[in-house]
Length: 192
Image 1: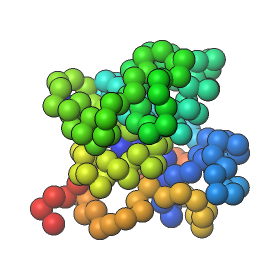
Image 2 (image 1 turned 90 degrees about the vertical axis):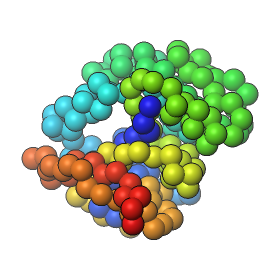
Image 3 (image 1 turned 45 degrees about the vertical axis):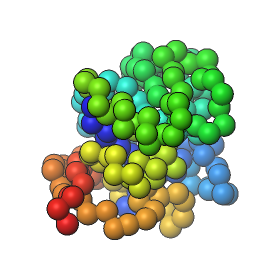
Image 4 (image 1 turned 135 degrees about the vertical axis):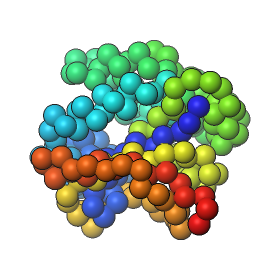
């Protein structure tokens, strides 16, 4: 299985708190909900396409706790998919998964556990949010593809997706929505 990191990011690379003001206020972040004014049906369609290719989610503990606290009672268009999709969770502190169906904790070293999952046949493993866990995946060269929705806003502060580099990438596809959001797919350029 391949690992796809799918993220909402600002033009300056911030991925923190896209969905709501209270979503992730860590380190005093006050710009939560920046994604809302730009949302349109084209982005919803792109997410549907991602879900069609997804066999399971790979989540870090913080994102997992946010999802497990929201999705079981959600009723929007993505709720059924989110609640039925298996979720593998990387955590150094959780001893057992929260009460969210189809959740499994990765055992042992997270990078080693993901390497084993990648050897299995099936649809892609999708990383959503999970900024700290994404750093582990990138540092261990476990990411096969980056699907980014780049929003036309600069926040100037917040957690960024790409925190260390260089990470040479090759553009595979790109389009822009009517709201000005760039939908791009990159793969690691391991020849550079």
